[in-house]
Image (tube, rainbow, N blue to C red; front, side):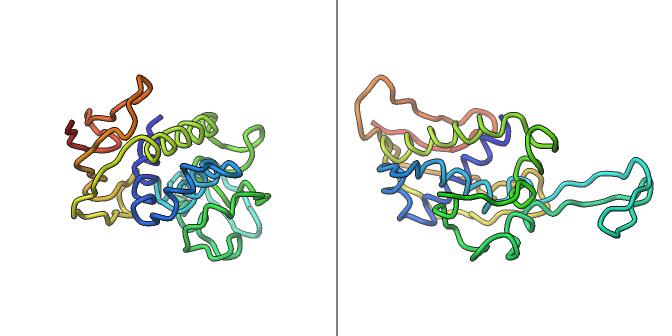
Length: 196
């Protein structure tokens, strides 16, 4: 679930950077929360790249890979490649409404399909948790975003905004036993100060 906590931080950042998404998440028409979660996973760099050593010589698509060669998979670049994505550098959750793209073009948690490729078995659980969090976050909490450093370091893996994502003046908008406050704990998803 490490990926989930990092991706939730990026989702909170997306709501801040693209405020029009807040109302869409609250309304959740056409399962918008799912599209939003998928676009957060595509657009933001939880893991910018992964490296591995070649176990034995092989040829793939005309490229020769030799034993012990270091190879790097550019996850961020793959998820934003203009050959696979229209307006690849724009945050557009609606692109996932009827998405039928290749599982090798969207590789935030591995490549290929879940049965024959190397893809995280917890991927769909991650998406479901993200959906539930973003719906809760937009429907039940009001907050302020103080000035902070929201740039992220593409050499850090996994990466986060430099300041994480700090919120203040956090208030519950609805009184209900279902309301849960997310507090800082170790490397938490959101640092917040809570006031009644």
